[in-house]
Length: 235
Ligand SMILES: [Zn+2]
Image 1 (cartoon, protein in one colour):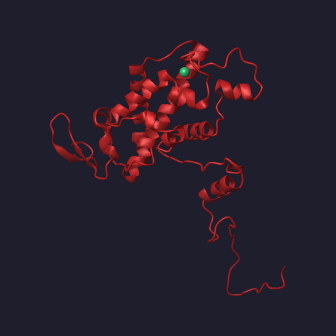
Image 2: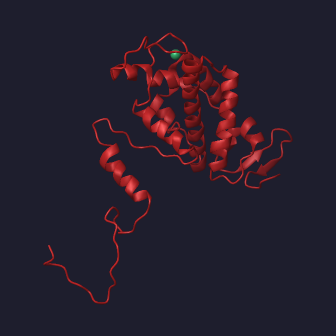
């Protein structure tokens, strides 16, 4: 192994990270390496979606949900857990799969319709669960807009699951208007504060969030109709 090695007295010894082409270590490179070697292994492997406008716990929840690794009743049943019923605890109208609990349950679908309407979009039923989690990849939003919208979707999924757990364990359930209010507040707290957009204000977030999907940071105030730059904090 050492036969072809030539030592150069002019060069100093240094560490080299074999996980990247240029030999330099970054915290991202071992993550990508582990991802490529282990997490994506298997015939139905899915690329890991990342979005840093939501907390890590939400990213992990979405990673698990895309792989049917959250404890929806059907998944527990598949793994041999003896349950009284595998029907949906919210509607009792179908078996509770991951997709049913987060998207297709009629109770949940009402919430998604409200969220889509809030963002000036419609037709949640036109999208598959995976398209939804990808942030509707066929629609053309600005780069930051894509992450913001996907962050809102992920926040909604996380809260929908939390609500489902409240129903099972505390027999408490949100109403659809309350659900929308909670999603609006939590997404503002998580997504708006972490986004690269310099200024996202609650008033616009609440009344006219779709302007954050556009290329320009120009916003029309719905109260006074004045157009202003969203990057100027307190107009
Ligand atoms: Zn249901």
